Image (cartoon, rainbow, N blue to C red; front, side, top):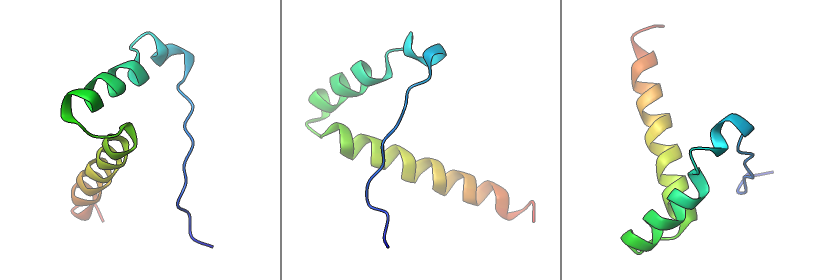
Length: 57
């Protein structure tokens, strides 16, 4: 069964940084959806982490 949906929880200690509001503002500014920005951020993070762990194996 493919996973194509994700729900996130913003921890209490991160809420003061207003990540949802900031994403919404950036999405409007870039004329993109919040979903697009979140998926792009996840892909960028995973790519970066995979590259940094290649040498550690």
